[in-house]
Image 1: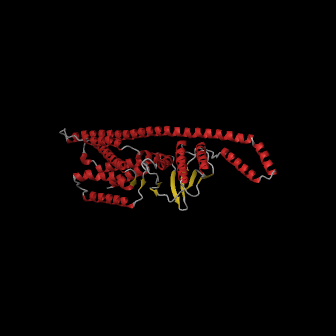
Image 2: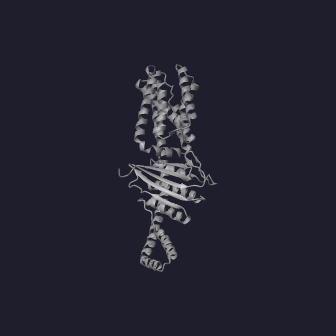
Image 3: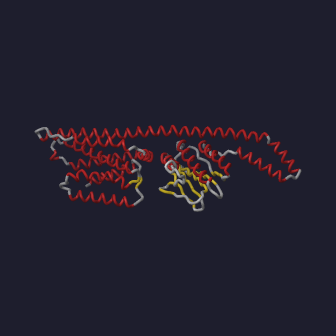
Length: 431
Protein backbone atom coordinates (compact mmCIF):
# COMPACT_ATOMS: atom_id res chain seq x y z
CA UNK A 1 0.00 0.00 0.00
CA UNK A 2 2.88 2.35 0.77
CA UNK A 3 4.40 1.58 -2.65
CA UNK A 4 1.10 2.38 -4.36
CA UNK A 5 0.83 5.64 -2.42
CA UNK A 6 4.34 6.56 -3.57
CA UNK A 7 3.38 5.70 -7.16
CA UNK A 8 0.49 8.16 -7.02
CA UNK A 9 2.71 10.77 -5.37
CA UNK A 10 5.35 10.33 -8.08
CA UNK A 11 2.76 10.80 -10.84
CA UNK A 12 1.56 14.06 -9.26
CA UNK A 13 5.11 15.31 -8.68
CA UNK A 14 6.13 14.45 -12.23
CA UNK A 15 3.17 16.13 -13.96
CA UNK A 16 3.00 19.18 -11.71
CA UNK A 17 6.64 19.99 -10.92
CA UNK A 18 8.55 18.54 -13.90
CA UNK A 19 6.13 18.69 -16.84
CA UNK A 20 4.52 21.90 -15.55
CA UNK A 21 0.84 20.93 -15.77
CA UNK A 22 -1.76 22.88 -13.80
CA UNK A 23 -4.50 21.22 -11.77
CA UNK A 24 -8.02 21.37 -13.17
CA UNK A 25 -10.28 24.10 -11.88
CA UNK A 26 -13.46 22.06 -12.35
CA UNK A 27 -14.20 19.91 -9.32
CA UNK A 28 -16.11 17.06 -10.98
CA UNK A 29 -13.11 15.39 -12.73
CA UNK A 30 -11.04 15.71 -9.53
CA UNK A 31 -13.83 14.14 -7.48
CA UNK A 32 -14.00 11.26 -9.96
CA UNK A 33 -10.24 10.88 -9.70
CA UNK A 34 -10.39 10.71 -5.90
CA UNK A 35 -13.13 8.05 -6.12
CA UNK A 36 -11.04 6.02 -8.56
CA UNK A 37 -8.03 6.15 -6.24
CA UNK A 38 -10.20 5.16 -3.25
CA UNK A 39 -11.64 2.16 -5.14
CA UNK A 40 -8.13 1.11 -6.12
CA UNK A 41 -7.10 1.17 -2.45
CA UNK A 42 -10.18 -0.86 -1.46
CA UNK A 43 -9.48 -3.55 -4.06
CA UNK A 44 -5.85 -3.77 -3.00
CA UNK A 45 -6.93 -4.27 0.62
CA UNK A 46 -9.55 -6.91 -0.28
CA UNK A 47 -7.15 -8.87 -2.47
CA UNK A 48 -4.08 -8.21 -0.36
CA UNK A 49 -3.07 -11.89 0.00
CA UNK A 50 -4.11 -13.06 -3.46
CA UNK A 51 -4.98 -10.80 -6.37
CA UNK A 52 -6.56 -12.20 -9.55
CA UNK A 53 -4.45 -11.90 -12.66
CA UNK A 54 -7.01 -9.58 -14.29
CA UNK A 55 -6.73 -7.08 -11.43
CA UNK A 56 -2.93 -7.27 -11.47
CA UNK A 57 -3.01 -5.88 -15.01
CA UNK A 58 -6.01 -3.57 -14.50
CA UNK A 59 -5.13 -1.75 -11.28
CA UNK A 60 -1.80 -0.31 -12.45
CA UNK A 61 -3.67 1.32 -15.34
CA UNK A 62 -5.46 3.51 -12.79
CA UNK A 63 -2.32 5.64 -12.77
CA UNK A 64 -2.63 6.10 -16.54
CA UNK A 65 -6.02 7.85 -16.28
CA UNK A 66 -5.22 10.02 -13.25
CA UNK A 67 -3.47 12.76 -15.30
CA UNK A 68 -6.63 13.28 -17.40
CA UNK A 69 -8.78 13.62 -14.28
CA UNK A 70 -6.50 15.90 -12.27
CA UNK A 71 -4.58 18.01 -14.81
CA UNK A 72 -5.55 20.44 -17.55
CA UNK A 73 -4.13 19.74 -21.02
CA UNK A 74 -4.54 17.72 -24.21
CA UNK A 75 -6.34 14.55 -23.19
CA UNK A 76 -4.55 12.32 -25.70
CA UNK A 77 -1.13 13.53 -24.54
CA UNK A 78 -2.09 13.16 -20.86
CA UNK A 79 -3.40 9.63 -21.41
CA UNK A 80 -0.40 8.47 -23.43
CA UNK A 81 1.98 10.07 -20.94
CA UNK A 82 0.12 8.18 -18.20
CA UNK A 83 0.44 4.88 -20.07
CA UNK A 84 4.11 5.59 -20.72
CA UNK A 85 4.69 6.25 -17.03
CA UNK A 86 2.83 3.08 -15.97
CA UNK A 87 4.88 0.92 -18.33
CA UNK A 88 8.03 2.68 -17.12
CA UNK A 89 7.12 1.92 -13.50
CA UNK A 90 6.67 -1.75 -14.36
CA UNK A 91 10.15 -1.75 -15.89
CA UNK A 92 11.61 -0.21 -12.76
CA UNK A 93 9.89 -2.97 -10.77
CA UNK A 94 11.40 -5.55 -13.10
CA UNK A 95 14.85 -4.06 -12.58
CA UNK A 96 14.52 -3.96 -8.78
CA UNK A 97 13.27 -7.55 -8.64
CA UNK A 98 16.09 -8.69 -10.94
CA UNK A 99 18.72 -7.01 -8.76
CA UNK A 100 17.15 -8.47 -5.61
CA UNK A 101 17.09 -11.97 -7.17
CA UNK A 102 20.74 -11.74 -8.18
CA UNK A 103 21.69 -10.39 -4.74
CA UNK A 104 20.02 -13.40 -3.06
CA UNK A 105 21.56 -15.83 -5.61
CA UNK A 106 18.14 -17.02 -6.80
CA UNK A 107 16.74 -17.70 -3.32
CA UNK A 108 13.42 -15.93 -3.99
CA UNK A 109 11.81 -17.37 -0.84
CA UNK A 110 13.83 -15.02 1.33
CA UNK A 111 13.44 -11.98 -0.97
CA UNK A 112 11.23 -9.20 0.36
CA UNK A 113 9.72 -7.99 -2.91
CA UNK A 114 7.58 -5.41 -1.12
CA UNK A 115 10.74 -3.83 0.28
CA UNK A 116 12.30 -3.92 -3.20
CA UNK A 117 9.22 -2.12 -4.60
CA UNK A 118 9.36 0.43 -1.81
CA UNK A 119 13.05 1.16 -2.38
CA UNK A 120 12.43 1.55 -6.13
CA UNK A 121 9.58 4.02 -5.46
CA UNK A 122 11.73 6.02 -3.04
CA UNK A 123 14.53 6.23 -5.59
CA UNK A 124 12.02 7.45 -8.19
CA UNK A 125 10.65 10.04 -5.75
CA UNK A 126 14.15 11.32 -5.02
CA UNK A 127 14.97 11.46 -8.73
CA UNK A 128 11.78 13.36 -9.59
CA UNK A 129 12.39 15.87 -6.79
CA UNK A 130 15.95 16.43 -7.98
CA UNK A 131 14.84 16.89 -11.60
CA UNK A 132 12.07 19.27 -10.52
CA UNK A 133 14.62 21.47 -8.76
CA UNK A 134 17.08 21.41 -11.67
CA UNK A 135 14.38 22.19 -14.25
CA UNK A 136 12.39 24.67 -12.19
CA UNK A 137 13.02 27.56 -14.59
CA UNK A 138 12.31 25.37 -17.63
CA UNK A 139 9.02 23.97 -16.34
CA UNK A 140 6.73 26.17 -18.44
CA UNK A 141 8.80 25.62 -21.55
CA UNK A 142 8.72 21.84 -21.00
CA UNK A 143 4.95 22.01 -20.61
CA UNK A 144 4.64 24.07 -23.80
CA UNK A 145 6.54 21.56 -25.92
CA UNK A 146 4.99 18.55 -24.22
CA UNK A 147 1.53 19.81 -25.21
CA UNK A 148 2.73 20.24 -28.80
CA UNK A 149 4.05 16.68 -28.89
CA UNK A 150 2.75 14.35 -31.61
CA UNK A 151 0.97 11.32 -30.16
CA UNK A 152 2.62 9.09 -32.78
CA UNK A 153 5.98 9.42 -31.03
CA UNK A 154 4.59 7.62 -27.95
CA UNK A 155 3.50 4.43 -29.70
CA UNK A 156 6.86 2.80 -30.62
CA UNK A 157 8.30 3.49 -27.17
CA UNK A 158 5.24 2.21 -25.29
CA UNK A 159 5.14 -0.95 -27.45
CA UNK A 160 8.88 -1.49 -26.98
CA UNK A 161 8.64 -1.18 -23.21
CA UNK A 162 5.63 -3.50 -23.13
CA UNK A 163 7.39 -6.20 -25.19
CA UNK A 164 10.50 -6.07 -23.01
CA UNK A 165 8.45 -7.38 -20.08
CA UNK A 166 8.18 -10.81 -21.74
CA UNK A 167 11.94 -11.28 -22.08
CA UNK A 168 12.53 -11.85 -18.38
CA UNK A 169 10.79 -15.24 -17.96
CA UNK A 170 12.96 -18.37 -17.89
CA UNK A 171 12.21 -21.95 -16.82
CA UNK A 172 14.73 -24.10 -18.68
CA UNK A 173 17.08 -25.08 -15.81
CA UNK A 174 16.33 -28.02 -13.54
CA UNK A 175 17.87 -26.33 -10.51
CA UNK A 176 15.25 -23.78 -9.29
CA UNK A 177 17.87 -21.43 -7.86
CA UNK A 178 19.80 -21.44 -11.11
CA UNK A 179 16.59 -20.82 -13.07
CA UNK A 180 15.79 -17.90 -10.79
CA UNK A 181 19.32 -16.56 -11.23
CA UNK A 182 18.95 -16.61 -15.02
CA UNK A 183 15.53 -15.03 -14.67
CA UNK A 184 17.04 -12.37 -12.39
CA UNK A 185 19.70 -11.61 -15.01
CA UNK A 186 17.02 -11.37 -17.70
CA UNK A 187 14.92 -9.05 -15.52
CA UNK A 188 17.95 -6.86 -14.83
CA UNK A 189 18.81 -6.67 -18.53
CA UNK A 190 15.19 -5.93 -19.41
CA UNK A 191 15.04 -3.18 -16.78
CA UNK A 192 18.26 -1.57 -17.98
CA UNK A 193 17.13 -1.83 -21.62
CA UNK A 194 13.82 -0.24 -20.64
CA UNK A 195 15.57 2.65 -18.91
CA UNK A 196 17.66 3.12 -22.06
CA UNK A 197 14.43 3.29 -24.10
CA UNK A 198 12.97 5.83 -21.68
CA UNK A 199 16.08 8.00 -21.96
CA UNK A 200 15.96 7.62 -25.76
CA UNK A 201 12.34 8.80 -25.73
CA UNK A 202 13.27 11.88 -23.71
CA UNK A 203 16.23 12.57 -26.03
CA UNK A 204 14.14 12.17 -29.21
CA UNK A 205 11.42 14.42 -27.83
CA UNK A 206 14.06 16.98 -26.86
CA UNK A 207 15.59 16.92 -30.35
CA UNK A 208 12.19 17.27 -32.02
CA UNK A 209 11.32 20.17 -29.74
CA UNK A 210 14.69 21.79 -30.43
CA UNK A 211 14.15 21.46 -34.18
CA UNK A 212 10.72 23.07 -33.91
CA UNK A 213 12.17 25.80 -31.72
CA UNK A 214 14.90 26.55 -34.27
CA UNK A 215 12.31 26.74 -37.05
CA UNK A 216 10.13 29.02 -34.98
CA UNK A 217 13.09 31.21 -34.06
CA UNK A 218 14.07 31.51 -37.73
CA UNK A 219 10.60 32.74 -38.71
CA UNK A 220 10.40 35.11 -35.76
CA UNK A 221 13.88 36.48 -36.36
CA UNK A 222 12.83 37.26 -39.90
CA UNK A 223 9.78 39.05 -38.53
CA UNK A 224 11.94 40.98 -36.07
CA UNK A 225 14.36 41.99 -38.83
CA UNK A 226 11.40 43.16 -40.91
CA UNK A 227 10.06 45.20 -37.97
CA UNK A 228 13.49 46.72 -37.28
CA UNK A 229 14.01 47.53 -40.97
CA UNK A 230 10.65 49.30 -41.02
CA UNK A 231 11.70 51.11 -37.85
CA UNK A 232 14.95 52.38 -39.41
CA UNK A 233 13.09 53.47 -42.54
CA UNK A 234 10.54 55.31 -40.40
CA UNK A 235 13.29 57.01 -38.39
CA UNK A 236 15.00 58.09 -41.62
CA UNK A 237 11.77 59.40 -43.10
CA UNK A 238 10.85 61.34 -39.98
CA UNK A 239 14.35 62.69 -39.59
CA UNK A 240 14.11 64.02 -43.14
CA UNK A 241 10.73 65.64 -42.38
CA UNK A 242 12.14 67.18 -39.20
CA UNK A 243 15.16 68.64 -41.03
CA UNK A 244 12.87 70.11 -43.69
CA UNK A 245 10.71 71.64 -40.99
CA UNK A 246 13.74 73.15 -39.23
CA UNK A 247 15.11 74.47 -42.51
CA UNK A 248 11.90 76.44 -43.14
CA UNK A 249 11.42 77.37 -39.48
CA UNK A 250 12.49 81.03 -39.84
CA UNK A 251 10.35 81.46 -42.95
CA UNK A 252 7.32 80.08 -41.09
CA UNK A 253 7.90 82.60 -38.28
CA UNK A 254 8.04 85.49 -40.75
CA UNK A 255 4.81 84.37 -42.39
CA UNK A 256 3.03 84.07 -39.03
CA UNK A 257 4.33 87.49 -37.91
CA UNK A 258 3.02 89.02 -41.12
CA UNK A 259 -0.39 87.41 -40.62
CA UNK A 260 -0.55 88.57 -37.02
CA UNK A 261 0.47 92.12 -38.01
CA UNK A 262 -2.24 92.18 -40.67
CA UNK A 263 -4.76 90.80 -38.13
CA UNK A 264 -5.49 87.82 -40.35
CA UNK A 265 -6.23 85.62 -37.37
CA UNK A 266 -8.33 82.99 -39.15
CA UNK A 267 -5.60 82.46 -41.73
CA UNK A 268 -3.04 82.39 -38.91
CA UNK A 269 -4.97 79.72 -37.00
CA UNK A 270 -5.29 77.65 -40.15
CA UNK A 271 -1.57 78.05 -40.90
CA UNK A 272 -0.60 77.02 -37.34
CA UNK A 273 -2.82 73.97 -37.69
CA UNK A 274 -1.08 72.97 -40.89
CA UNK A 275 2.30 73.37 -39.21
CA UNK A 276 1.06 71.16 -36.38
CA UNK A 277 0.18 68.43 -38.88
CA UNK A 278 3.60 68.71 -40.47
CA UNK A 279 5.29 68.50 -37.08
CA UNK A 280 3.19 65.53 -35.99
CA UNK A 281 4.47 63.57 -38.98
CA UNK A 282 7.98 64.06 -37.65
CA UNK A 283 7.10 62.94 -34.11
CA UNK A 284 8.67 59.72 -32.90
CA UNK A 285 7.67 57.71 -29.82
CA UNK A 286 10.61 56.32 -27.86
CA UNK A 287 10.18 53.52 -25.32
CA UNK A 288 13.92 52.75 -24.94
CA UNK A 289 13.40 49.40 -26.72
CA UNK A 290 13.90 49.06 -30.47
CA UNK A 291 11.32 46.27 -30.93
CA UNK A 292 8.73 48.13 -28.90
CA UNK A 293 9.56 51.37 -30.74
CA UNK A 294 9.13 49.73 -34.15
CA UNK A 295 5.69 48.28 -33.35
CA UNK A 296 4.37 51.26 -31.40
CA UNK A 297 5.37 53.83 -34.04
CA UNK A 298 3.94 51.68 -36.81
CA UNK A 299 0.50 51.69 -35.21
CA UNK A 300 0.86 55.28 -34.03
CA UNK A 301 1.02 56.30 -37.70
CA UNK A 302 -1.95 54.09 -38.60
CA UNK A 303 -4.02 55.43 -35.72
CA UNK A 304 -3.27 59.04 -36.67
CA UNK A 305 -4.49 58.37 -40.21
CA UNK A 306 -7.69 56.64 -39.02
CA UNK A 307 -8.62 59.11 -36.30
CA UNK A 308 -7.82 56.78 -33.40
CA UNK A 309 -6.50 58.51 -30.29
CA UNK A 310 -3.17 56.86 -29.45
CA UNK A 311 -1.16 57.46 -26.28
CA UNK A 312 1.64 55.72 -24.43
CA UNK A 313 2.86 56.20 -20.88
CA UNK A 314 6.13 54.85 -19.51
CA UNK A 315 9.36 53.32 -20.81
CA UNK A 316 10.65 49.79 -21.15
CA UNK A 317 13.22 49.06 -18.40
CA UNK A 318 16.73 48.06 -19.48
CA UNK A 319 17.67 44.39 -19.58
CA UNK A 320 14.23 42.76 -19.70
CA UNK A 321 14.97 39.03 -19.73
CA UNK A 322 12.87 38.05 -22.74
CA UNK A 323 13.72 37.07 -26.28
CA UNK A 324 13.18 39.88 -28.77
CA UNK A 325 11.13 37.47 -30.89
CA UNK A 326 8.75 36.73 -28.02
CA UNK A 327 8.45 40.42 -27.18
CA UNK A 328 7.65 41.07 -30.84
CA UNK A 329 4.91 38.40 -30.79
CA UNK A 330 3.23 39.79 -27.69
CA UNK A 331 3.36 43.48 -28.65
CA UNK A 332 2.57 43.11 -32.36
CA UNK A 333 -0.41 40.82 -31.77
CA UNK A 334 -1.64 42.78 -28.76
CA UNK A 335 -1.50 46.21 -30.45
CA UNK A 336 -2.80 44.83 -33.75
CA UNK A 337 -5.86 43.37 -31.99
CA UNK A 338 -6.37 46.68 -30.18
CA UNK A 339 -6.12 48.61 -33.46
CA UNK A 340 -8.61 46.37 -35.27
CA UNK A 341 -11.07 46.55 -32.37
CA UNK A 342 -10.81 50.35 -32.06
CA UNK A 343 -11.22 50.73 -35.81
CA UNK A 344 -14.67 49.12 -35.62
CA UNK A 345 -15.96 51.48 -32.94
CA UNK A 346 -18.73 53.90 -33.86
CA UNK A 347 -17.97 56.39 -31.09
CA UNK A 348 -14.66 57.49 -29.64
CA UNK A 349 -11.73 55.39 -30.78
CA UNK A 350 -8.71 55.10 -28.54
CA UNK A 351 -5.69 52.99 -27.69
CA UNK A 352 -3.67 53.61 -24.54
CA UNK A 353 -0.49 51.75 -23.63
CA UNK A 354 0.92 51.81 -20.10
CA UNK A 355 4.38 50.49 -19.28
CA UNK A 356 5.65 50.29 -15.74
CA UNK A 357 8.26 48.33 -13.86
CA UNK A 358 8.40 47.27 -10.25
CA UNK A 359 11.56 45.64 -8.96
CA UNK A 360 12.22 42.64 -11.16
CA UNK A 361 8.87 42.82 -12.96
CA UNK A 362 7.55 44.69 -16.00
CA UNK A 363 3.85 45.28 -16.63
CA UNK A 364 2.40 46.34 -19.98
CA UNK A 365 -1.28 47.24 -20.36
CA UNK A 366 -2.94 47.81 -23.74
CA UNK A 367 -6.32 49.49 -23.25
CA UNK A 368 -8.50 49.89 -26.33
CA UNK A 369 -12.08 50.88 -27.00
CA UNK A 370 -14.46 48.22 -28.35
CA UNK A 371 -17.84 48.29 -30.01
CA UNK A 372 -20.07 46.22 -27.73
CA UNK A 373 -19.39 43.47 -25.23
CA UNK A 374 -16.41 41.17 -25.69
CA UNK A 375 -16.61 37.45 -24.91
CA UNK A 376 -13.70 35.87 -23.01
CA UNK A 377 -13.62 32.05 -23.03
CA UNK A 378 -10.99 29.88 -21.30
CA UNK A 379 -9.01 33.04 -20.59
CA UNK A 380 -8.86 34.09 -24.27
CA UNK A 381 -10.78 36.74 -26.20
CA UNK A 382 -13.20 35.01 -28.54
CA UNK A 383 -12.55 36.07 -32.13
CA UNK A 384 -15.36 37.91 -33.89
CA UNK A 385 -14.08 37.02 -37.36
CA UNK A 386 -16.15 34.61 -39.45
CA UNK A 387 -13.21 32.34 -40.34
CA UNK A 388 -12.66 31.14 -36.79
CA UNK A 389 -10.47 28.21 -37.87
CA UNK A 390 -7.79 30.54 -39.26
CA UNK A 391 -8.14 33.35 -36.72
CA UNK A 392 -7.80 33.62 -32.98
CA UNK A 393 -4.25 32.24 -32.94
CA UNK A 394 -2.70 35.62 -32.14
CA UNK A 395 -3.83 35.58 -28.52
CA UNK A 396 -2.66 31.98 -28.09
CA UNK A 397 0.73 32.87 -29.58
CA UNK A 398 0.95 35.77 -27.14
CA UNK A 399 0.34 33.54 -24.15
CA UNK A 400 2.76 30.88 -25.37
CA UNK A 401 5.46 33.53 -25.88
CA UNK A 402 4.86 34.83 -22.36
CA UNK A 403 5.01 31.33 -20.86
CA UNK A 404 8.32 30.63 -22.57
CA UNK A 405 9.77 33.62 -20.73
CA UNK A 406 8.13 32.85 -17.38
CA UNK A 407 5.53 35.61 -17.80
CA UNK A 408 1.82 35.69 -18.52
CA UNK A 409 -0.85 37.39 -20.61
CA UNK A 410 -4.46 37.99 -19.56
CA UNK A 411 -7.47 39.84 -20.93
CA UNK A 412 -10.19 41.74 -19.12
CA UNK A 413 -13.37 43.46 -20.32
CA UNK A 414 -14.33 46.83 -18.83
CA UNK A 415 -18.12 47.37 -19.02
CA UNK A 416 -17.44 51.01 -19.92
CA UNK A 417 -16.40 49.76 -23.36
CA UNK A 418 -12.74 48.83 -23.09
CA UNK A 419 -10.62 45.70 -23.39
CA UNK A 420 -7.47 45.53 -21.26
CA UNK A 421 -4.61 43.30 -22.39
CA UNK A 422 -2.28 42.69 -19.45
CA UNK A 423 1.25 41.51 -20.27
CA UNK A 424 3.46 40.49 -17.37
CA UNK A 425 7.22 40.03 -17.85
CA UNK A 426 9.62 38.72 -15.27
CA UNK A 427 13.40 38.95 -14.81
CA UNK A 428 16.24 41.18 -15.98
CA UNK A 429 19.47 40.23 -17.72
CA UNK A 430 21.49 42.64 -15.62
CA UNK A 431 20.50 41.15 -12.26
